Length: 366
Image (tube, rainbow, N blue to C red; front, top):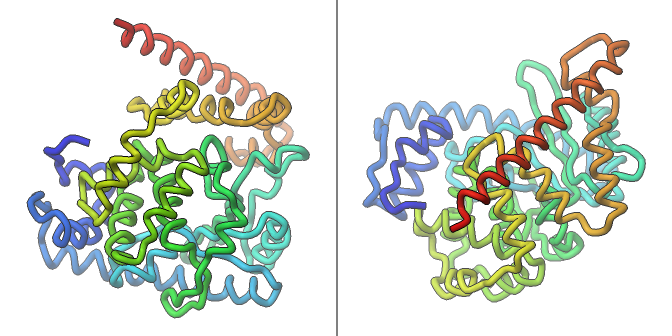
């Protein structure tokens, strides 16, 4: 990230709703950068909107966590919901609630949400490809549309998050009071790791919230983060490249209290060719190439030919419900046409991606 950052351009791309959040963090950590829109009235107005929206989400979260507790299902709050317990009120907007559940409890958790009025994308659980997924989206429509995302790994499952050993996350999780809700949250080190993986997933857009969260987490737990354990897990799980990318991005923008020695160790990491290729597919400035590149990166990272073939099958032949929802049609009789359209789109995306990266490779060859 260049040193002459234009925060105004970042906010214009990411959305004005992040103005109070960026203002809060920059004012404390990097005051030399000019902060756009320092209209206190506008910031106060945005914070009130965020407070009202978050209150609605946490009211619903309280009902959901009670239902899960009654059913004997443990959950861990992730990302925005977890950060609500760290930020001052009205700073961190979020549109959905992310919860980590144990893999063996996913089907039961989906039933609990269905009983609370949520519709789910459970039909995407195709036989033999459950291990290729890591989350299920559940939506409840009403005066306010609420999305609850259940994760059983740190998403997206491939190419990096499947490497993170999930049972350890549960063993290290801590209890916390988050906006009046007694809940489990990841340990500071695991939370930071998750935020780094999530930032890379949104490296072209939607990255600002994770970047702010990394800075706020480092400040909130300053002196209490076990950096040796953090970097040890980073190398153990082989996620050095996304962690390095995300920490450097946050450090250059917000200067959080991240040890220089840690950044130096990450910077000295020399990945093999396969790792470089996978990361290059994800760190792509062209949005169209990035979309296709993610599929190829995951395919490259999936271990074993059988799993790779199952992944390809799940992409080319998703469940009928997925296609009906995708093409916004109330006429399932047109399903054969949807499959033809889907296969055509998949072929064109793959072709454009292969040609784009081949051309990019030739251009970069001296």
